[in-house]
Image (cartoon, rainbow, N blue to C red; front, side, top):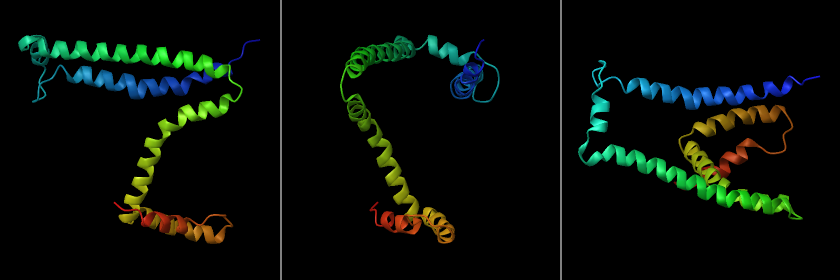
Length: 155
């Protein structure tokens, strides 16, 4: 008996690839055949291939070269690290220590954005609305205390 549910797990990934990878590439490729006035033209390709000193071709080659180098270095670091992690006793701790630095940038952005939104009174209005919901429910943390904590964030 075949499992059909495993094929359904592919659908979100295919939608993501179609919407955020393939669709922009098709739009950019299609737009490249038009000039600024919106008329069909091959002028963009003429300037790309006939530039002085082949500037655009060199930049494209360098982009692909650097992408390849970064991919190879990443593979050379990540696969031995993954193999090493599978053989450790406390692999969850080490995995967390490896992944944690990648989250710091996102956390700093979220904290700075919340401070900015509180200063602009957007987040404060939302938290005041949620405070009225909090008073009717028994939540352990008050949203208003969060807004007071982040409103002192200096920008």
